[in-house]
Image (cartoon, rainbow, N blue to C red):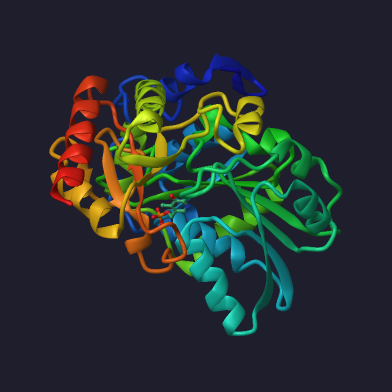
Length: 377
Ligand SMILES: *Cc1c(COP(=O)(O)O)cnc(C)c1O
């Protein structure tokens, strides 16, 4: 892995562990949770919604270094995303992937219905369409790999395409994490992390971080947080930093597990299509190889049969948790078409977020649940 920022040549794994600390003699090694709304006048901070806290800044320093830009932390990923869309002038054109996080699609649709903006949906692998949209849209929203079909956009080509004056290109980098992909280095203006997922890594917090390539966006995002009020929680920011320390080892283990499970699922008699960017059969495998340092921890696969068969697989699993969300130490699985706004997906598609358990235990659990659900049919 390469270095994170200009003045420091640490590998990202080392930066994760060392950044965001107060190095003055006698300070605690980790910035403790700071439950403060207001501060005694006379220093930089007066009110935390306006001026931040050292706890939020520790997280922002860590993620900013990884993404290679200036970070602002928010109450959740969606809070940061909403702050970005809020910057758009009325009547803007948004280019949005046809496969993306349902919260973002919902936010964009709600704004469209209120007449705030227009929307053009594009297939993630439609590189020519995205390049054309770069010259026409005011906000280009990319998510790569996408949720849940795990399509990888050709970010190299799209980020390099000439953009309409004043246009913003933002990449939701949650699924890749900055360890696997750094959109700002490719020319994106903004990169978004739902820190709820891999950064936190333990399914115990909501938090978001937006990172900007240029300081102008940093000011706008801070101002948006100040006025919108979607500030990170004190404990959440502390836990997100604590989680981030182990991101590299968690990711390494979980994506090694995911590659093995994806290869076996692809051969399983009870499984139809298996989607994982690390499989040669994946439609955007070539882009994934070029662009990603690792193929990630998410696998989407179709159970043979009907929705009820897929639900029975979820119900029969013991080690793998039947729960939504992703990016944590524990493996989780859900049938995505059961989620509001995701009804267009294949009805038996299960999205598996692979955790750090022993891979043979995960496989035994999956194989047994798949076979038992087929036997019950
Ligand atoms: C979860 C998620 C979000 C939203 O983040 P929250 O922290 O839940 O608000 C946005 N994008 C992607 C890709 C996600 O997985």
